[in-house]
Every structure is written in C-alpha cells, then in structure tokens.
Amino acid sequence: MPIPRRSIELTQVTEWDDGTVRPFEDYLAAEEPLEIRIGAKPIVVTMRTPGHDKELAAGFLWTEGIIDSPRCIVAIKEADGKSNVVEVDLDSAFIEPDNLQRNFYAASSCGICGKASIDAIRLRGLHSPNSSFKVSPAMLCALPDQILARQQVLGRTGGLHAAAIFDAKGEMLAMC
Image 1 (cartoon, rainbow, N blue to C red):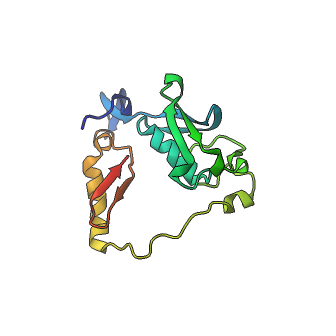
Image 2 (image 1 turned 60 degrees about the vertical axis):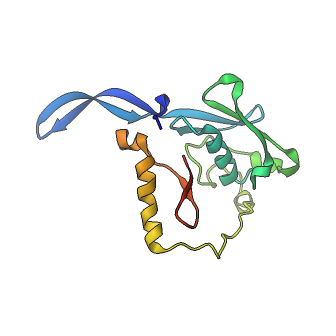
Image 3 (image 1 turned 45 degrees about the horizontal axis):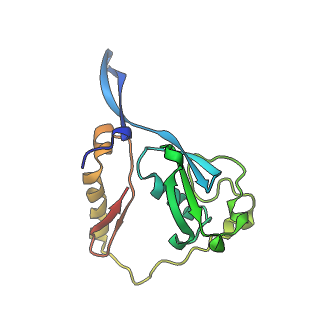
C-alpha cells in the first residue's frame, strides 16, 4: 500500500558525525493540526499526522467520554472540504451537554486534561473488559512485529506510532 503523500515530508537536515557535518535530505513524519467539531461547534484542536482523521475524531470523542458507543455518531465528514477540520454529527438522544465543556485546547487526549471538574472525569461510563478473552504471552509478544511490518511511514521516518486491533487468533483486524 503506498504511503499517503501528506504523511511524510522531505526536508534538508544537517548531520553531525564525529566532528564532520554533512547536509542531506531526510523524511520526517508530517504533523498538522486537526480541528474536531460537533456539528459546527469546535471542540478541540489536536496535532496529528494526516490520515485516518475520522477514526481519530471518533476515538477522541470516546476517550473523552463525550460518546459511549458508536451508536452516538450519526455522521463524520470533512468540514466543507477542509482537510484539517472534521465535523461529527451526534444523536442528541445519547449526548449529555455537560460532557462537551472544555476549558482549553489539548495537544492529545488522555481523557482527563481540559475537564471542568473531577465529577466530569468520573462520568466515563467505561465497561470492564471481557474476562474470557485470552491470548498467550507468546502471541502477545509477536503482535508488535505485525504492526511494524505494516508501518511504512515509520520505516521511512523512524518517528511515527500506530494502533491496531487483533482478534484472539492474532489476526490484525485494523490498523491506523
């Protein structure tokens, strides 16, 4: 699969090697701001490598506790053709307006930064994992190699991470 053009940038760098300086061109992971909106209302601006923006927006809304399941999302789209703005339409029946309040823009989401109160942190509504889902330690240790084999941008830049979902047999279901 080809690397998306906006995921990497070619730049001129200077390398210092044991007292010798040499210029050369190197690939860097691209990074641009992404504005996530609920409808037309901006919620957050976060930095990201372009690509999988809709998935990032959905994951952000879930980790922030704004939504508790995919059923809350009616639609996700680029805003008016803007590549750095994603609009998410939510089903108002599933949304608590108090969960939307943020006091500052965040660079990344751990689920706590920007909350207005401790009570807002406790409103997460997360469920316990499935205790019957088990994998062997050997399989678990083999999963990162599968991710690395498919990370073309990391291979060229050395500076990008990924997230993946695997089934109980160790088959990759999705990766971003």
